[in-house]
Length: 637
Image 1 (cartoon, rainbow, N blue to C red):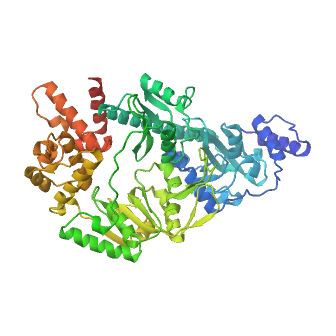
Image 2: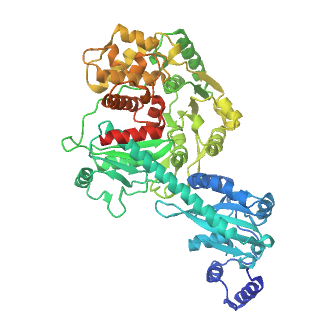
Image 3: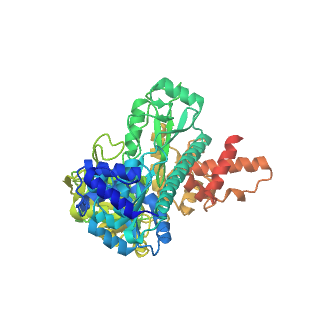
């Protein structure tokens, strides 16, 4: 039990002489002395409060910490029912980012600005649990008279720091606060428990990320990746590499690998930095190397593919066809496509925000680019995939950041919104944008003003907005999966792109164009389609639409032995006119035949899905864990 009487005597003596007359906790006494050095007035009745815009930017900056804390906060609230306390999340500088708990405590906290945006570092308000925990980098409880300022002495607080399991840097603080007369002895234990739960979740996410990178790496090796390849975490840590790969890395760039930390040192921290920044740095340091991001909803890591010893450092590359930029370039003679193009042209001329809807792979981005071309805007067409962009990078990608805004931000970078000024901002998979990020985007779209993370300077933008989705956003609004106000803002006009199965013989026109484009990429003559293949392509229902058609033709081109694609060159599911069967349903007589068929189908599915194991497992009709297991067994054989 805390002896308030003796602590009050110690406080009175400290106020008068600068020393404590009775025994007092050394951390508290040290904090009082620091508060005195900061010049804190004991009569200060409240701390300072950030402006709303500054708080928004801080929340964006620390969104991974906030996101990881939510489950723990919900569970912590249940344990604190009827304690008249609240749970507080603060950033490493002591700024409160979020509060939750008893409404009475939350309301009372506003009297001293113990609320979102309040500064609770020791230099702002003297001894308090949040600020002192940051200074000590350790859990601490500050009760009643132990606080430095008189108004704050009406409170009792317990705080515990949260550190990043990757590098032990401080991510923020979990605090439990309430009126002093409702002192709860277990508050510190609960704050520590919540902090550890958040750290455990972050550590688990890190393990999942590493596992995802390794499985992707295994699949690539299974598909023929060379042995001078390295699997990296998103912070540049080496997760797997053969001895030959490490030897080749040291030969080509001796100082790149930090052996003590086991990571690639490109002169910047990649956590929070842009995806392309790391890739460009690596590829710039190792000419001829290729660095592929591994993304599954968020950035998991990278696969660094070093050029083989016999490979020239500047390999020749075929030039991919130019992206379509006009409606006349969109392939399709069916009535439904002509009507869709005519509607899209009218929409483009209006300048109003357009929401392009359609199944995956129907060519929504082609229409978006055609809308941009039709509008004849002077600025650039700037696409961003809201679903593929890692959560921790999406704020920086959209809004940009200033140098020093966060760890690794060693230069100022304009965001996609700023880059689209005078042109078209294309938001692909807009339905995947995190719910807590949506109000920030809405604010920019409403005001035409963007702030880079870490900057107070407003930048005015004039953009044409085109959004794309394969989801039914109106239903998402009903389920509170998407903000209603943002939906109305982006969907002034709605354009549906018909699936390939509704377009009749357009499938043959597109197939011929794709065969020509694939031939250019591979440096060979285009292949024609047999009559049997043409009938098969017409008959198949194409759940993956044009993207699936391209994958099928690319595999058929590899399998074909002559100048024409024959029916046996097509994948079995396309020939049979149905989606791929689960590998467990293949009826071969011998185990070796079964394994051969299974491995072929797995390789085929992975190739068709561009290396995406989640989608490959879905196509095969098996669990992703089952696919991983079978890949591992295949690699051992």
